[in-house]
Image 1 (cartoon, rainbow, N blue to C red):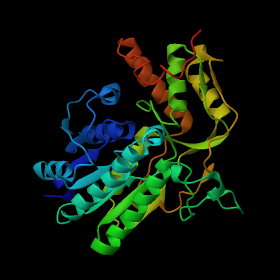
Image 2 (cartoon, rainbow, N blue to C red; image 1 turned 180 degrees about the vertical axis):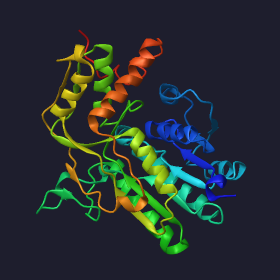
Image 3 (cartoon, rainbow, N blue to C red; image 1 turned 135 degrees about the vertical axis):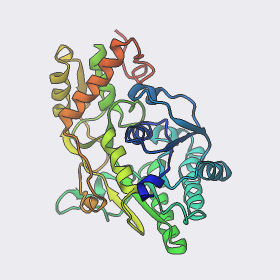
Image 4 (cartoon, helix red, strand yellow; image 1 turned 180 degrees about the horizontal axis):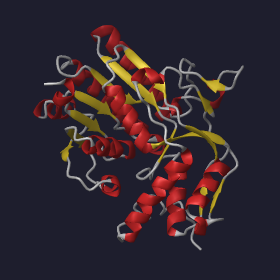
Length: 334
């Protein structure tokens, strides 16, 4: 039996945006996958796929819950995405620490106890652990080895996870691969401080005005690409405590608006943006990422077009509630 034939994936945070895309990708390549999440709302999965999945409702802050899922389903590949995003961590820092730090340590510990079957853990870190001033002063680029100075609890938690991953390698030889996304967009990205680009696309499709809360330039990463990168990383064979900045499309907000208007001409003038940039580095060095293998990057305009197609398809089926997918608080009443 080939190694690929023995694969059994578990994806934590499977009901989030990146989690849903990771599950979708694995299902469509016919790889056995278990979706693990504390939440029960499968709206993001329903948005992008119709296939049946194996779902385990579990809590990453409960080590026993994680271990039972790994053993009952004989998991070999573990992709850890469960976390509370910036606004939720800010609203409840103790809960944020419990989920984002203790929960991640539980994932590492559970995998460490099963190294005979689970060779490595792939997890999402974040560019959100860096401040704009952390970019190199000589070239303006955020390099992978830059010192991080987080300005949010969420950023501190992500930095702690990278440190714990390194110690698990030093003490236990558990291999880990951390991937640092920046602005993930695409169907299912309906919450978080950088969800504006996706909400803007949805607003255009349903004919509503929308103002993105930031401007300037940033690196956009299509959710489907992020999912495929995580899967490639899980299969890479890399050892050690590895961390990579994730590349993508360096995009000005006016370029994004232009792409949305080209894909949805009838929405011209509906999408605007605030002038101030995000408080993170604009230019990201993803050097070394190619060691994982074939890392996909869908061009921004093509990714916008694909996102529009998903929303239009669901709208045509009368199966798209804009409020459910993030527009309720974002759209001003008229």
